[in-house]
Length: 291
Image (cartoon, rainbow, N blue to C red; front, top):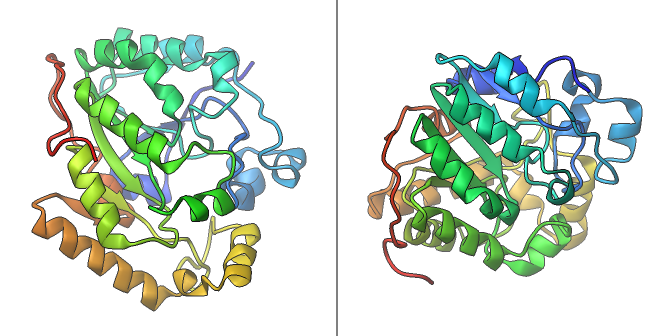
């Protein structure tokens, strides 16, 4: 049992416009090689066993829904979650998120953003739709590359890229406000990623390169495991700040040509904090058809 479920934010998320984060667990069984969270250690509320064995286990906050019922307020702009994926593999058995979403519907904050790469979120579509009648609920779905071989190397415990695109299409068709987060940007075709995101979602496209210490002087940064992957496979350019800026420019140009909002860093994630349509949720097809 946890003592609290909402945390006032600072740094990146505060600059983006969020007021609080909601994290339902203390570790993440996706265990992505690049995940910055274990580099934060105690600053992320972790214990040594968490960052030493990141991805091998998780500790859920069993009273998350009860805490949310008490803590949610109308002025809050909430990011769920910066430290673990709320639809990580273990959530399929633990089922904490349905209770959290019921709390959001009962005590609606101003905006509730769910960041995930887990197609398990489709289990809760009815709850998402119910909450969206009371407040702005937005799903930011993480798709990091258009190459399945790259996905298998960097994030072997996550769903395939195609399965994730299908989840985005399904959410969009169900009338859930859905954005694609190309974050972190892994080796890929930048223009192809933007084109697919445009065709399968309707929200702004958000992107962020791998965090490297040359750019991010303090705080969380990309894990050594991902840097080693880049070394082994000749992908070090994706860690180079100048190359990262070039990729972001290509993405921004492709999004502008398609008439879609695009942003990166705090400004990009800030696009997710704006209040959206509330009270009417209807199905809509993928605007350009299924790819």
